[in-house]
Length: 257
Ligand code: PGA
Image (cartoon, rainbow, N blue to C red):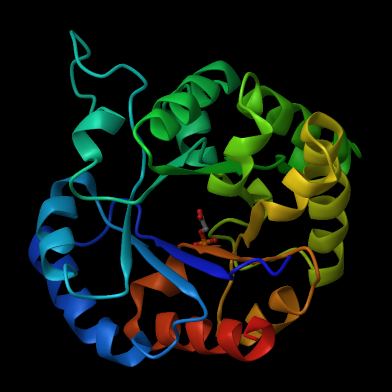
């Protein structure tokens, strides 16, 4: 089964609502024709409503950068998946910056995945090892356990709505990316094979898996040429309209049918 390539721009804590809207107005015409690629922007929570309104007639979709697992309640500062449904199609969870700075745990990533699926949204679940774990040869073990924990209690049928982003922490924002071959190897053996073990080959074949970590136009082709890499979760390069458009064009050229 052909998996649709998926490029998501994670803007992190960048761009005000006004800047976010101006950006998508400039970006959309440049990437409108690439219907064979799913194109997603993930602005700050504060900009979701305005960006969703600006993209209402557009093929570009919107993601949130996190969501709480409860529908509502006494959770100061949090936004629930239910509250996000008018604005987004995707929610990024488990990002290493949330794991490192906000105490995100595997258990909560799993709760969030279930809440997101219950709202008919799609989770983009980020996993990845630290530099120390990479150097200690623990990558496969770490990534496998993050995948198993994140998917605990989900069904095989949920898998075609789940996206996994493999992001080695040492490659995020560092300018150092994993090589295409190394990323392919880890994605196949620690992510896709793990899902096959949990939910069978068909479910594993349907899951889209992104690579993330210093993806830019100059290395995009190397990642997109790998059979198990279905797209990219992009930070820095997604803040630039021309770079973002170039990434989509490369994905369409390399993976498009
Ligand atoms: P980067 O970020 O592309 O700036 O390395 C990727 C991410 O954190 O998702």
